[in-house]
Image (cartoon, rainbow, N blue to C red):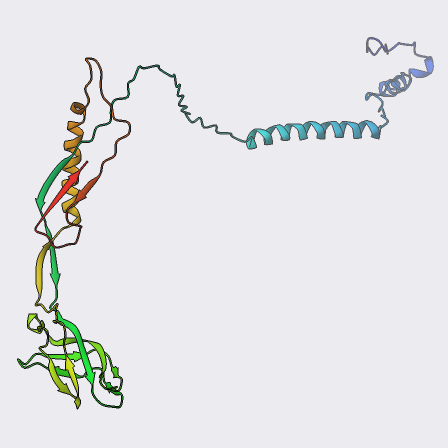
Length: 286
């Protein structure tokens, strides 16, 4: 057999006289047994395993896989930043002094007056007349007149004391004397009694009560016009407009000039204060 060409060659040998008697099958078996043969399968090869190389390869593989996984995770979880832009406005002021010729004029005082009917409504409830009672004591002992003691005039008007009064004892030739506030028992002008409407003895024969002065203030319900705050404000606003219109004409200026007030005081004074009784109010403004 040719190892290089893979061709099986069988060399023929002459048969010996002893082989003639054998059959052909025996001859073939002997011939085949004498042929050099090679195994059909290649011999097995054995490799030596290096564990350090295996470990290094494993680590490199894991690093590559980890890097790839990190890249994927970063791509999925990368933060999104939104930037908002707001417009900003800045104001710049430039002040430049200007030289303008000015002239100070002589001060002027303008005066105006207006009147108007009042619109306020006043009301005053009925009032009882009030006055003073004087007591004279002729007793030689002190006396006390209690509060609420009523005395009646000859025409039927009753007055009552508002407090207790202590009368000193008489000391001849002087009498004990004291005074106390009193008012009429009924409201209205009928309580406005004249002086000495009461001049009568009281309590004891030696004690007398006299009204040396008249009782005043007694009145019925009153409704009357009064000055309202709105009345004064309305007239004042009209006066201020009038004086403002008159102001340019009060200062003599040349052509091309203008008078401008820089220190002006406005004062308005009504002839009746707010809340007082009056049918008309007059306001003077300067």
